Length: 189
Ligand SMILES: [Ca+2]
Ligand SMILES: [Ca+2]
Image (cartoon, rainbow, N blue to C red; front, side):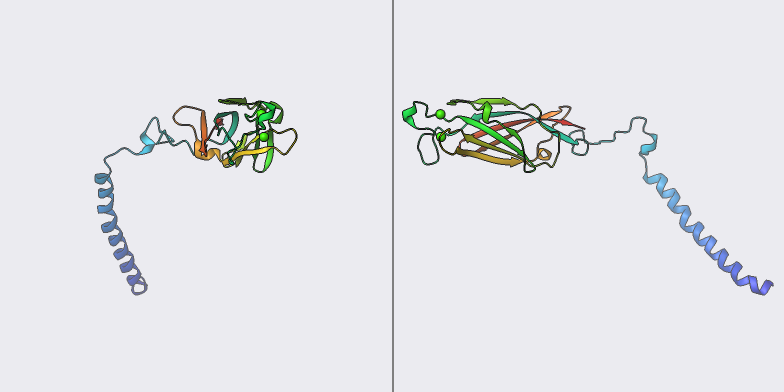
């Protein structure tokens, strides 16, 4: 029996010694190389180490206001937006808003007649969207006798315009071709 167990005994002893030799310095090393207290000892752990990065906490967005701050005085071909003989060449601006391809705002009845300068529309009853929703804004000049004149259109997603710091709102500004359009959004977690 002794002759049978002797080799096993020896192997176990070698393994035990090896483990002891390997584990002893590594335990010592961990203590020496870790002068900072572990997170478990922190009475006020901060779940968000970077307070400016709130991308992981915001979940939804909602449009609240649309502002048209500037637009070209003339159509792309240089002509007036409307016929001069009517005496009202400035455009009669209205907005249409689509979210993920579905129309959520038809501003034809709230158009700004013969607009000069800037205009603002309060957007009530807007749906709550996810941050990756594709929001398309289309601006047109209302024409009663012919098809409306296209002004401009653009698309954006709320995720790229998250609030900073402790704010719960932010804006997206579109600037191109003489147009400046500002969208106001509120965000929720
Ligand atoms: Ca027109
Ligand atoms: Ca007009």
